[in-house]
Structures are given as C-alpha cells and as structure tokens.
Length: 104
Image (tube, rainbow, N blue to C red; front, top):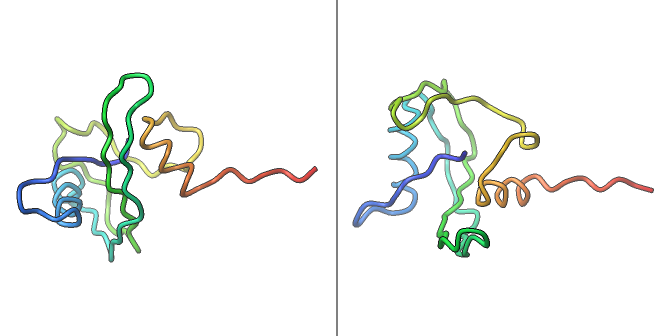
C-alpha cells in the first residue's frame, strides 16, 4: 500500500505528503517532490469515490523506520510487480512501470 492520508485545512498537497511521510516513516527524507497526476474516479466494485494526488520524489534517503505502529506494521522496499495492491496503487504502478511487451 502506498502511504496515504487526509489533507488538513489550509494545508497544500505537498505539505500533506511531507507531514504524512514524517508521521509514518520519520527516518525517510524525500528530495524534491512534484505532482505527477491527480486521479478522480469511482471504484467499480465498491462504488467508493477515489480522489488521489500522486507525487514523484526525486530521491528518498534514510531508513524505513516505522513512526506509528498502529498505522503501519511493516515497511519494505519492493519491486513494482508481484505484490498485492489496492486499485489505486495498481493504477499508479501500471502507469509508472508499464509491462514490457514481448517481441514476436
């Protein structure tokens, strides 16, 4: 699952991202972040509205030490394929890391 959270009043999307990362993974330091895409859709199965701002960090340094063990039970770097993802996380993975087509 990608880190997530809710924006506070008068907080920018970037400030929200930095605050959430600091709360959940306090030893991780992000470099310059830029908005990659905003996703506004409805989950086909549940009908739940999804409204997500997806950012790309130029760099990430530090350890994946967990800040709040009630929110996160573990953190690990993973390759983009072979892990179970939510629909939003799958969308992000498939856009950032499209499957390579095999030549015939």
